[in-house]
Image (cartoon, rainbow, N blue to C red; front, side, top):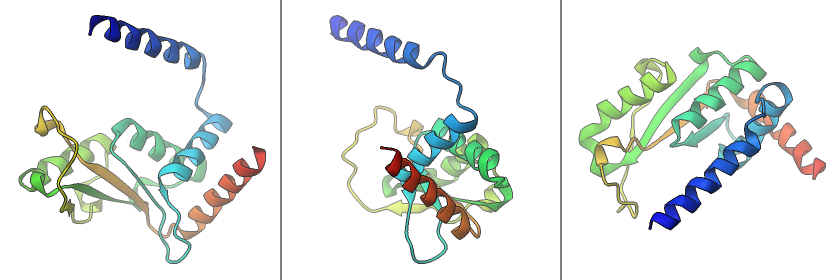
Length: 159
């Protein structure tokens, strides 16, 4: 076990070193977030949905920053929804407060939490630190979605 932990630590250290000089602004930020949206975003052609879902608070904040910096999306246009296993129904308010504090977005911009009715395969040692996923939507996001899908098309061409 100790040998494995040492290998993991060494590999993570190398990974940090690879990106230690990288600056995620300008072009790099736009490309990274277009890739994130390509992987995790809602790309429905019908309707006016622009959405992004993830459970990692840093990724959510990264994405919000990108929307503001690259597309001038104001926080007031964001609509958030928490999704969490129904086994956490008793924690909904604290989970919503957690995401509100992380994002700096008021609870009035949250829609009703989605309780997922499934048996979770993932077992958490401390269930009080599980906060589900956060879906971020942008009001009137159709044009924004089209622009970002155009960026994704450009990334496909570049490869």
